[in-house]
Image (cartoon, rainbow, N blue to C red; front, side):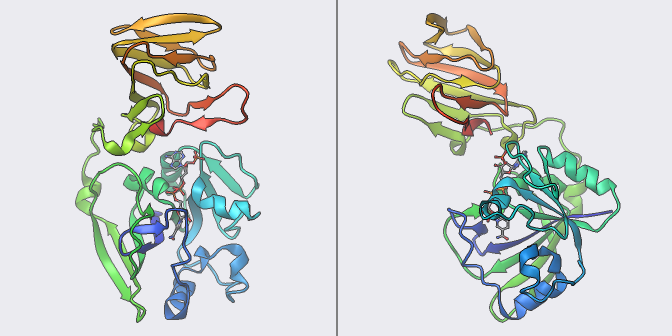
Length: 321
Ligand SMILES: NC(=O)c1ccc[n+]([C@@H]2O[C@H](COP(=O)([O-])OP(=O)(O)OC[C@H]3O[C@@H](n4cnc5c(N)ncnc54)[C@H](OP(=O)(O)O)[C@@H]3O)[C@@H](O)[C@H]2O)c1
């Protein structure tokens, strides 16, 4: 069966790019560049193939590539709408509209990979980045890590998602004089034979907390933490705090667990007290105020985004993603 392979360049401390997406500390030269061009020529972007002397070199492993939107973005910004035109290209995004007929945008990476695995073909290259790799972790059959002997201290991790230990077994390593190693790992059979649990338990963590000037949001369920459709979080506002006037593209359900909140819509203010539940329809412009300290539990479809009257565009709710 076709494999999903995460083939990626990483630092010794497990990063695939710097905090701002920097990657110029990954050299591409010498015998290791020759080895990659021989074994994985299809992983070079199309515009680089002729300058690298591999314009006509046949693919060795992959005929399909899957990228996260943030991996596709830097090329797009400089007009490269079809970076791997020699492969079948998918970009995973809930926000992007495909700018090129050669690139298919999908919003459900797991369904895509399961469908691709049913089809005939060469293996599928998971190009990155860390967020997409985390979403696809259970589907990854093989890791090929080009590990650069460099430590960078912070950046974008190989897997950027919830804490779930998953074991891989090293099957081959090639070492180069520069200190680079290319190690292939396959999924531990014990892990892959393990039946997936029917439920998913999410433990609150400091990583999921967002503090704004008016409120503290603590993310609970969200797609990056294991739910498929809904996001939930708690919100706490101190006495006297008021949020900005805004609307949300999806219905939200707020259950007040402590204190009182006031919600103002169309010039009318309603009070919601502990134990009561407030249903806010999609796109309703509202302002939330806390006359005393208030805590609430909120749920929403996970793709809801915020709009502020009088401003352009929408804003994501990071604690819900
Ligand atoms: N060292 C290397 O070999 C290497 C290779 C590839 C990438 N990189 C680097 O990695 C960085 C990007 O990695 P990243 O972790 O920040 O981002 P990423 O995984 O490339 O992209 C994240 C975006 O992909 C979409 N996405 C991810 N999971 C999804 C899901 N389950 N459902 C729907 N959409 C989903 C979302 O797009 P929307 O927000 O549009 O919904 C999300 O914001 C870049 O700096 C890139 O240069 C390095």
